[in-house]
Amino acid sequence: MFSKFTTIFAVSCLSLAVIPVRSATINVTVGGTGVIAYTPNFVQANVGDVVQFIFQQKNHTITQSTLASPCSPKADGFDSGFVPVAADVTDNFPLAQLTVTDTNPIWIYCRQTGHCSQGMVFAVNPGNNMAAFQAAAAATGGSASPNASASATAGVVTVTATVTVGGQAVTTTYASSPASASSTAVSSDHVVIVGGTAGLVYSPSNITAQPGDTVTFQFHSKNHTATQSSFASPCRALSSTSTTGQTGFDSGFMPVDANATQFPTYTIQINDTTPIWVYCRQLTHCGSGMTFSVNAVEPNSFAAFQAKAIQLNGTANGTASAVGSTDSTNGAVLPVRSAAAIMALVGVVAGLVL
Image (cartoon, rainbow, N blue to C red; front, side, top):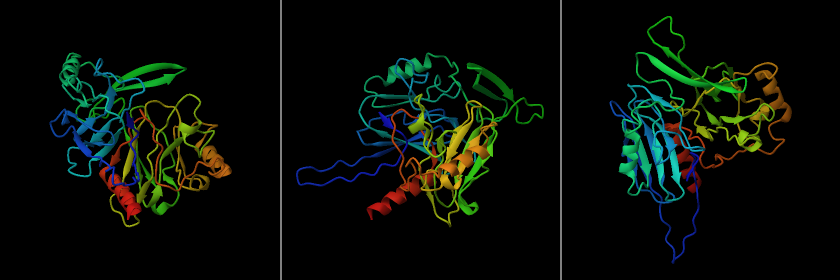
């Protein structure tokens, strides 16, 4: 239904008999100061239209559900993950885009605790079922959704994380007060600089993160990606090597001018302590050692991962790319980018046209 968040560039041939239909971009605001809602809460969209979600204050998600179960994630559906926005942010809000590929209804909710039952639901092409969808959401009575993330409010932060231990899923809930020195746990955002004056590196190149933490890749000059891979194949996207159907994440190419003062970002959420392996899929960058890891454990250390990437030179499997595009997969997690990243990508496409 929706393609993975991506920039789509198509060339249509004009003829006297056929006039191409221009796609529309439909803006939807997610949350805001004192607002627990999507505005508007439904849209009518044509094939090829782009629904652009603008994340505003507090901490919300765009999670696909179903008409029958409005406040539960759809199996194999998309999910933006939690996108926290501080109260003092006034511009350059995080964005996520979905491209409509058919006219079937799409049902969406925010999986922050209590938000869905308070009416924070959204639909694309709902037909006559929007009222029924809202009523079914309200009837859930504020039950918590799976894997609810940290609240964006001050006070006590409640975090629910699912961690796999010995092959079994264990759900852990813990509370923390930002003002308390004896807090049991607090989720953290780990900022990683991609490229820039440091060269072909992620800085830092290896981190340790806890379930509930986020990792924000901040892209500096040149044109890089943050693409998930595996320890066995450092320079190949996980989606092309997994034997279990894992799609992995991919920021897409982020072109940044050397004189830029605002930098696009891409955020992932840590759900468990399983190691995460990342590389830049720009031509030759991975083979030059541009790799990153989360929770690497001996003997599969970051150093071993980077050494393997250099050994394979990043081009042995023909997967490196010099083109600023990403593969498109339906039903994948929705990456979130800053407004600056969207503008940068639009500029690249415009340059191709001109």
